[in-house]
Length: 94
Image (cartoon, rainbow, N blue to C red; front, side, top):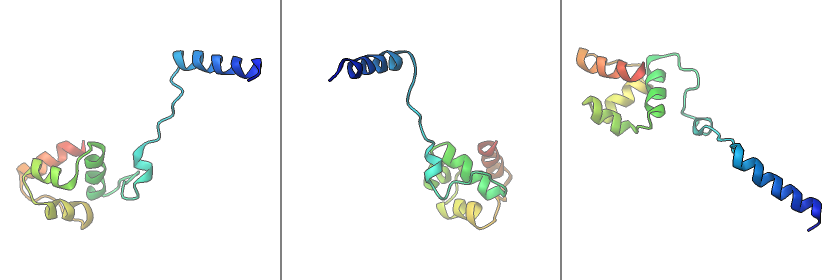
């Protein structure tokens, strides 16, 4: 290597010592099911669930419903009917 190449390597080590040179790309950009601009209740719930890193079955267990119920909320335009369940879900969305 020439001296110029060695100097560039040394400079890059110095730069990375003081600055974070990585540029993380949000995983949501690669998930076609992730609602970037949620409009409906179901989209807001899906976004909140995904942001929290929860799978459908994990959310269902936390709220006390079946997986199918969560799917109905997220994809089929349904909303929780019981007040205590609705309150749990609304806390997640906010």
